[in-house]
Amino acid sequence: MINITIYNEYIHELQNEKVGEIYPEGIHGAIKNLLSEDKNLNIRTATLKDINESLSNEVLADTDVLFWWGHVAHDKVPEDRVEAVYQRVLAGMGLVVLHSGHYSLPFRRLMATCCRSKWREDGDRERIWVVEHSHPIANGIPEYFDIPHEETYGERFDIPKPDDVVFISNFSGGEVFRSGCTFTRGMGKIFYFRPGHEEFPVYHMEVIGRILRNAANWCYTENKVAPTFGHYPKIEG
Ligand code: ZN
Image (cartoon, rainbow, N blue to C red):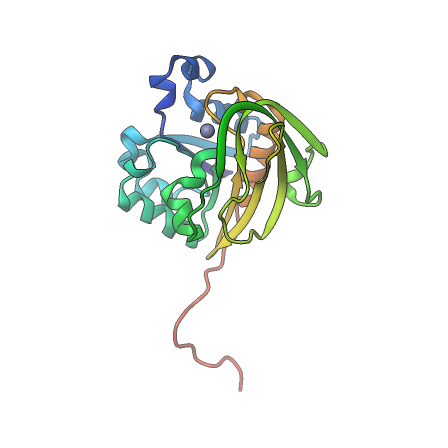
């Protein structure tokens, strides 16, 4: 079993009636439902309100892959939780960063760039193209698919060069965006996936569920052997 923790700040759903109707169980609940189709995933959730317990050192130590959705409360995440997530990724925990999580503190610390982009809330159509068909995260995903309405993000997206760009989006307003990017930091595998604005039912789409399940499996590293650092005696001769 792969231990998954889904962190969602869980604020829009409680404060905005429209968002609450789309996600009555919270965005974390909807993502949990999508991931639950994979019986190899053991899933728990965490929210900002009780983050010191739901994302404690013990929970993180027992998490193989962490999903992260945040937007309006990035700066409310306690510094020691940001550092703990950062250190766990370096030690091999997978991290799936969703939508506006691109500006979360753990992601920015891991990327070491500003991680900003253009954005616009016009309800554009988003067309997502697979550009790395052999990548496990693209397994079973059609060559392209549409999200009828989404928030628009536009390049430049200020990230370091990804290991792989798996998906590229084009929006009906004209922008393009590297929507599915992978990175390695320390022993941890990271996947950034752009869709998931809270005002549209993106996390009810089956194709999105398939991508998130693929990402959960890809970000998991089995049988990690930690490297040693520092002075090292010769092993031959
Ligand atoms: Zn958004």
